[in-house]
Length: 325
Ligand code: PEP
Ligand code: MG
Image 1 (spheres, rainbow, N blue to C red):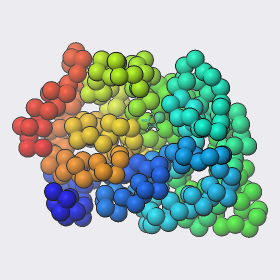
Image 2 (tube, helix red, strand yellow):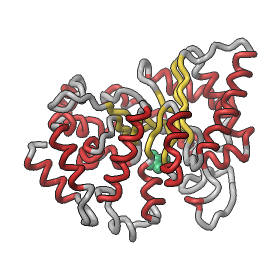
Image 3 (cartoon, rainbow, N blue to C red):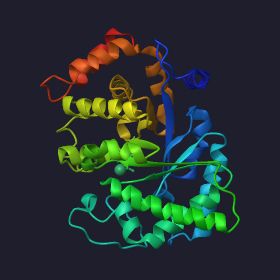
């Protein structure tokens, strides 16, 4: 099976009717990047920068951060890495940083909210990312953005750091792309303004669905109550993919869902063309991609998105079975 996967990794993730899907890896610790080559992923679609922070004993200074990001870029080689700025708070605590005791941590002081309220912290991270990305392709992404204005504020901090970087005579990135995680439903009604200002958008389905259904993503009692393979989710994803397409902005999905073959099938049927997942899941999603026909899938997913069912998982499973996927 391993031999088969290694052989498969050289095959393009292309549907039977010739549509290319980009398969990317999610990473946090450097060990995840070790698996990049073997996984056959095209790049790192989500590098969760808070993960290395969570295993440190104190808040890493700019030099430590620069070294870490430079190593990540080195390990990825030619493959682009999408660095997400710190997403602390919520379910991700730093042992040496108390933050606030929010009653609803997922909806509390976290991620970009902390970054904008404590700009010195965000600027330090941006400075380290620019230092590591000097002379290289650099992709940055902000988590938990709920208003386009937050992207603009974060971008202004980035511009200040970039000016400072250049004033010191350092090399600029060869290419700098700035993206946003779509995880807060409010952003869905600001898409034209968002797509005009973001170089790319990545759907964080874990948080987005938690807020859409008002279910705690970490509560096992609720885990089976709602299904991500449901008409409202498919309808939303089809809308997002179409809007991104009409604005010419790349849209990916980097939540848990993207790494499961049946969910990946649904996402592709919704019009999503970039999926980011744990490196160990890339091989099986690649097989799914290579066995599907987009034309018929898209039609079927459109039909499913209009059903009154709570879940369309069985329908999709039957479709996959009938179509040799
Ligand atoms: C998400 O919310 O879907 C996501 C990818 O971010 P995280 O799981 O790190 O919150
Ligand atoms: Mg998230």
